[in-house]
Image (tube, helix red, strand yellow):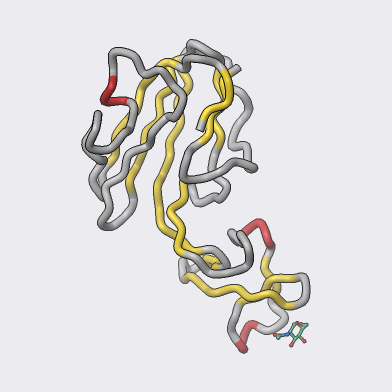
Amino acid sequence: MLVFRLLLVTAAVVMADICRDPVCEFTFVIRRTSSMTYRGSSGTLYNVALNGTRLQQDDDAAVGYFINPSDVITLDGFTRDLIVVNDIFPGPTIEVMEGAQVVVRVINDLLTEGITLHWHGMHVINTPWMDGTAYVTQCPVPAQHSFTYRFTAFPHGTHW
Ligand SMILES: *[C@@H]1O[C@H](CO)[C@@H](O)[C@H](O)[C@H]1NC(C)=O
């Protein structure tokens, strides 16, 4: 079994069960967000504050309106700019069998920055442009563009 995790995020939220297929496909959307914020149903981002042990919107009008902690990236309780994968932090985990083809469609939804994803520990043999080291083996994926990584999960282990 190969477990692998992204460098810019750590994993506690397991996105899916282990993929046991020869080809395993994933979609990663890269976005900015902030810790200690909450996105309302209208899409507006609100600051969140602690009220005792509960979280509430940081707004006088919202006193006593508590927010489900699973809807907030709390981190250490401070507001910080974050770049996240699939709107979660810690980010998604990919679990596949050794030797599987891993296909990850990366959608860079950032407004200005190009990004790559580096599969640390993978031996990306013969396809260096799939290794995700920006300006070394691959140009960054421009803002508002996507790129599909394809590589063989090898060797087994836990990787970042
Ligand atoms: C915390 O919540 C309680 C219960 O709704 C409310 O009475 C109180 O004003 C809140 N405290 C703050 C600082 O908003």
